[in-house]
Length: 231
Image 1 (cartoon, rainbow, N blue to C red):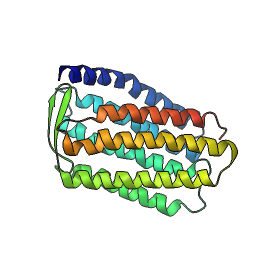
Image 2: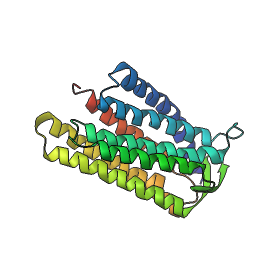
Image 3: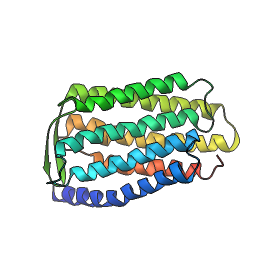
């Protein structure tokens, strides 16, 4: 257990510069690039919510804040979902948009917004939370958690479907880049299913801080691919 405490504390410290870096990259994409470009906008928003997700997760482990641990832990679910929401829309636009994608994107906004509003329902995700630093013990509502996980998987499937379709219908540099993005996305999704979603069913404390490392790594990897292209 002492080794786990050291590992968790170290990861929490590492998450601080990751949050700062996420906000910097989001600023570049949204304000230094052409935010009207849907590729930069959607990936920039995913990166912005990554920064917010990391920040809220870090604050969850700090006691005596003006915001309760319960509130912050619940907010972490919502910010994490918006990362995947905007990434899924990004896959509809990168490296070229589908001709007819407005209806499905509008539907995704509605569903993600409904999950966001569910944040206002008491105990919909988290029933009770207790911080015993560096561990965050959570008693979860399995119904709310399962609904959240199902939508997470749906967004992931849509993302893979879009990327695979574009990979099969692309050539040259785009084909190589999309292949790299598919591999990176697979790593990020699988890691978060293990550490940020499935673990809740079997382990009493939160592993989100580990899932953060994978998510940050994957998004920055894709960020580097985007900047090797001209959009």
